[in-house]
Length: 458
Image 1 (cartoon, rainbow, N blue to C red):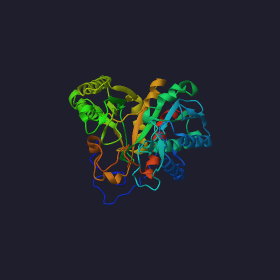
Image 2 (image 1 turned 90 degrees about the vertical axis):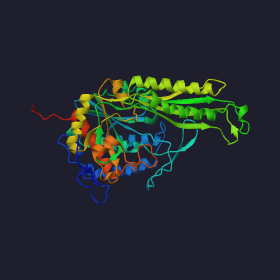
Image 3 (image 1 turned 180 degrees about the vertical axis):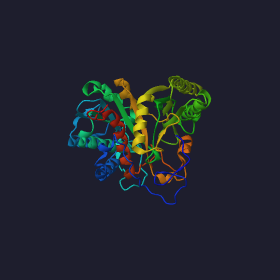
Image 4 (image 1 turned 120 degrees about the vertical axis):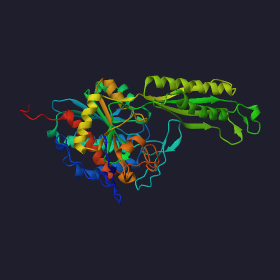
């Protein structure tokens, strides 16, 4: 989609950037198919905002979402859903059967990240948690999963309140541990046999795009991700006598620098790949050469061939640098987690894009020009069920941050440097206008499959 305008501070597309900024967004004119489901949304928004702020202030790490899961389960029961808790650890599944029709799966993830919040919000998190290695860490909803839970609970409330407006069955999935791959845990816990089998799986993610704008694409929409834990072995000694030791810190530094050549020199310029060393730990004191160093490496790819090439290159480099440093033993390379490429079904994506465009209007729903290098495990549900799945992104950033920016340039050039992205300690959607967008998007997409046929209609 092409437009000649720029993004105005109210989220509209204007030919000139207005002078003042605002975080308000006019509610979209609802499409005919979703309008009955949206009745009462405005009255529910204060409660949903309070819910969002509560969830944001009380984040929980992966597989530790006990409070969040309890909130989701309690609200679903109050709305009239059949609720199952403890699925795949801390997962919650709600089922609402409402006559004949297809089964639609709607999914939200619940976990937060080990990040210290720096948003300055009055409801900012001060929580801490214990990571898998036993370390106490700060915890923040730096990826917006609190927004996902809020929007899905808003959608489930309206679905339960307006059963006369739709027909079929909805399976609402509140998934644990998306950041480390919690969807497979739910599948392994008998998800396919315990709950109605969906005909389509729908999910969404809040993004640092202007609030009110949505984007998706058919085919691959998010990259595969592989994470490794690498332990390099040296021989400890005194910092004053490095010749008596084998320094794993220097070895680790060489590995980090050499890994930067994988994408620049071993992957084609037209191919998508990322290699990141996100963690490096070694030693306890400045004058002690330690015995070991640990690196945690993350790789992103969009095709099996590129994935295999990256994994082989990383393994080769780690082992070669250890040998070049005279390491007393081979390094240990252990997988931490892996996410497949998230693939949107083509025909189902076209239907969702059409539904979103009807709900939000022309110029707000975009086809993403390329695969997003972030990763998701949402696609695991559709793959395991053998049914189409569609995943889209909806903006949650203050449009004032994008004043004067054209949507096309945003798609091509990426975020301005002033906009905090997901996983940043400063990432925080503007909840007032973002929540109704997320609720409306879920209901608009689901309404295509859940529409109630009018008696006598052709």
